[in-house]
Length: 289
Image (cartoon, rainbow, N blue to C red; front, side, top):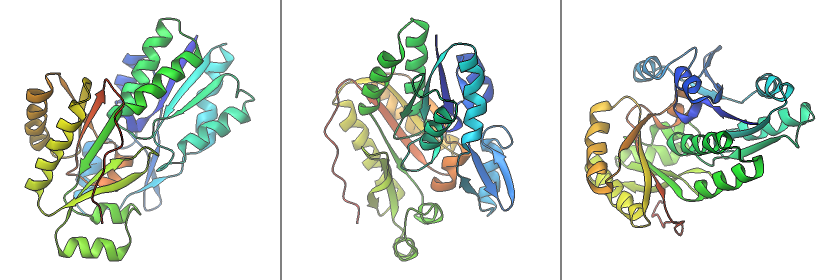
């Protein structure tokens, strides 16, 4: 049988992983010399409280040994693995998973899928993999379907400032300073290569949300299978935007709380709509400068 493994940035809690029958690999963040396992040693509520208080966190490279310990009992039981991981463009987790499979001599029994994003989109890929595994589909069939789903899933984020992108190494100091001076509100997305890049820079939060709404409608024009909304420490704001999404998309909106690993880069007030579309669209054109 095929078992599904995912990292903690997909947005599920430990309990939700267990209920879904998906194996969790916690990623790590660092506060000074102290390491935390994402979702285990530190939960989003505590993380964002500390972040608002000025505590500086950093995401940490994934250790292949963690994945070896995760993969080995599954393989020893005679099963195969589909491992759906956070984008390789912002994390070394995909490479670590490949290395773990090599260390176990199991490259022919482990498929590592680069989600090219994180959060809700990654979660939907893992859920699809689990459903297909339960139906008895083989590993290549699952990987093909999940990869197709990835190409039809877009997510955009808006943040209150460029400060978090700078802290996360996504902008130079000069870019961040200029953005702060003129109060730019960046809209960021995971592009087709899985890079977390600035899509557009908007002058006000109100205008940024209106632009997000237009992007949601653009995605909806390709047909909607499901939709979600990422939030961090801004539940009231998320509920308001999510209600609007439900009114125009006519599907339930699943709220996905941004994990501490991603929170290091996007801050506590991020808002991120994501749509799984029926058709694969052409890449959108942004106006970031």
